[in-house]
Image (cartoon, rainbow, N blue to C red; front, side, top):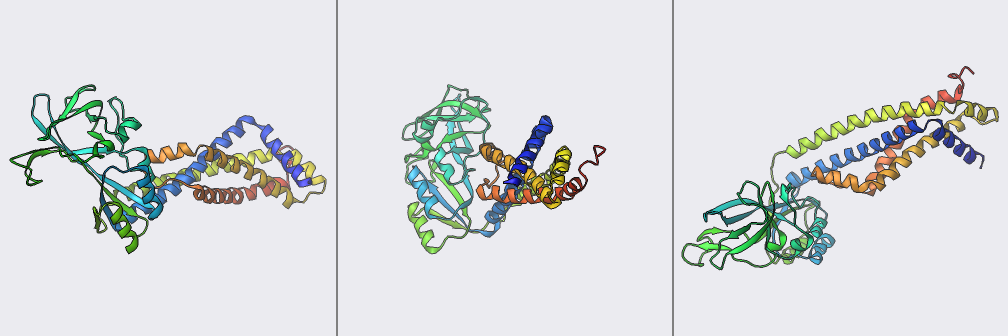
Length: 377
């Protein structure tokens, strides 16, 4: 009970000694926590990117008309997906002067529940004018499309996809740096093509618009024979197993540089935090002197100060957990492969606390041994 009272008394002195400094220390602590977390995220993202490029077999399948239950089936019955890509589709449309234009890089925009597979399944595309798709437009085909801002079309125009089965007309709701079709467009079996003579050959066409989505996934480990068969049946046999890719390591280089930058930033913030925490401890010099005269041993006084310092670290981590959506948003914007989890917080908390306690220990010992040295006592 005595030490508990002394702890709260020292904590109160810390907080009251300099309010602005306390706020500054809290913000630096929060930045340090995020730095440690981002370093861990960058490290694990590079591991995931490496495994998807070199270590794991990729599984490709064609996907149409998938629902939340279908996605849950994949997430519940297969290993964690560490990497996912979607092949861009080809689109043929009529220009304003009636000419057929072919575009081979149209993006597919998936409903939110696909992010259960992987948070990077939806590529980033800036909306330059108009708006993005609504939830209903992504899940039910309503004849909407986002067009390339340089295509000559504007928001509100109609884009026509030529077809022998009757042209398909799509309302333009926005412009971007690419053509974007919602997943709902691919949710029904369409034949949008203009053939040379007949439909006897799928390759005998003048122009066509793809009506299926090709997905490539890399799991955290290779699938067993049973799991591969289960996935084969889940996608109705449209499954291909491709060998590991030897793609360049551009992502790895980015993660290495970003990880190094975060590590350096963490060191500087830790040094700054160390100096400020020792300054707060020195503000308790008179109280420490009184505590010592009552018979409290130096090692217990140091332990009390370390507990107070640890309280600041704990407060920063609690705040960072509250701000987790902000960190997740930031990692998604960077297109990182890994999203921080609770165990990442715990590991970062232990490491950061250890660094804080070990680095401040010598200074706290000096302060306790001679608490009034800076006040002329």
